[in-house]
Image 1 (cartoon, rainbow over the protein chains, first blue to last red):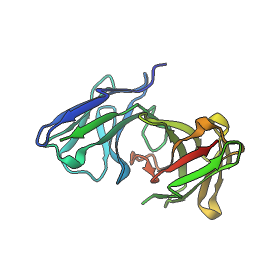
Image 2: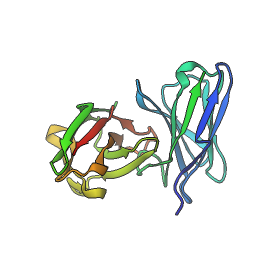
Image 3: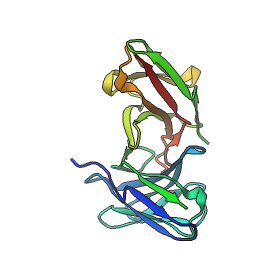
Image 4: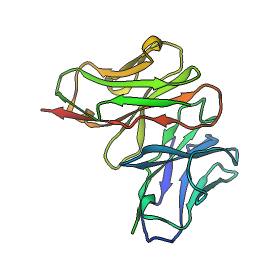
Length: 114
Length: 115
């Protein structure tokens, strides 16, 4: 079974731009979670989608948003990019809701904001 | 609210020596506990997880962890370190309520293996 895939793997943007990242979960998995990883703050939960509905959201500003499609693929969008948004963005999928199941992570998208 | 504390941002051991990475958690409900490993420029790979079936959990690559409720700990061990174990290790906690609150991670421990 193919693992979680994320595209693109690397991205360079400038301040003020917006960006969309994509995540394809493991086949059959219905839950997709997003995390931001930075050297200073570590791994932080962004949000989780289950059956196209956002079930929970971490403590991030409204510039961070996401959605999930009927095939469970998910996208996250960051608008009005700031230098501090430079990070590795990780997507994870699980069979059921994130709290009850193991999450399997993709390789991440490394975003650099200049 | 949940939290995870990993003692030691860097741990250095000799090849063949015991690996011990410490993790203490705080949770208002019985937790799920996880250890993940991250190699450079890669995502997180699950090493093992605790879900109450057994307090001693065996994972991949010879790693194991023991859940100790009285000490609120879930330390990761491996009897004999190998050069390929050099990586970043993360302990994480999730509640059992079924709520989709995501994983709460510790700050990570960078494991260095000395030849």
